[in-house]
Image 1 (tube, rainbow, N blue to C red):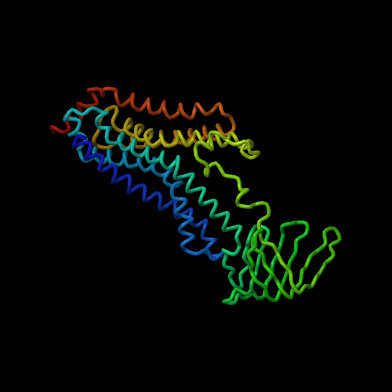
Image 2: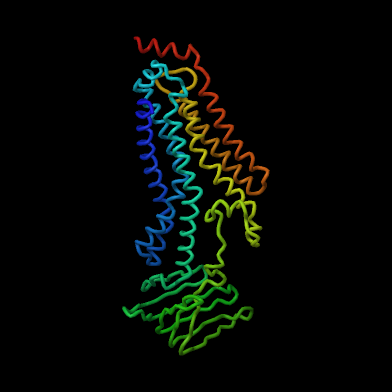
Length: 373
């Protein structure tokens, strides 16, 4: 590898790492706020919280790395231009493609990294995340009931505990069960306990009452009991019956959906996600090639390249919008799948075509004269 390539590539890698860390932290912070409820209201241990967030990391990196690679390329090459290092490289006889080689090499490396994320780490981590999330929601024994707080177990069940003894006994229990909206039930008891079972967690209450308003008549019904059991399991959502979302599936599962009723119902979405897994990593290279074509082609001006930088950003933003639109369209019509590939390869081809063109002499002469002066 030529020394100039190593020199520029070293700066590109350092800038990419910095931008990746900054963007990942920003996204990680915003996404973590969604899980704060589990700590504040459900007593989620910090270790489990970190596991949740860690499992989301591959999904962040798959989005961040192509953008970080593009931003790093723009920053480094603009800096080389402003420091007149690019002038020296051009004067040494390096072509536009040779100047762009370090950035293209970085784009290839990042593309391979994103492929590893897209094809393995993303589905594996997101599958573990959803399994852990589902198990946590289904297993109420993992939730620490806070004293004096109304805890929403599911969307239909709310539990209040006045006091919880070190032995696990619950005192002053209130359970509001709204799983049947037409027949909501409220139960209160002096004491009880949280008991796991094969069908899911349940609350065993002692010395209490069950209150209900009869639908239609509006008649209030009050039943006193010595012992009463309330099932807290989320009916119909056993872990083994949970349908895998597209992001949880590996490539072969996306491109070859099973005969399951839900798989057939969402067949187009699964296929679109599968092709997106193949296409999306290539945008790391596409973005870099677009950036290099914008900065290196045409007339050279070391005084500043703001317009070219903005043009590159606009092109990348437009291409990203096209990618999202084609993905959405492919989830409804498979005819859009070829367009997903065409957008990538046409962009790469156009970028290399611009880089391979010989710059006009009128574009090089002012720079050479400026250096002599």
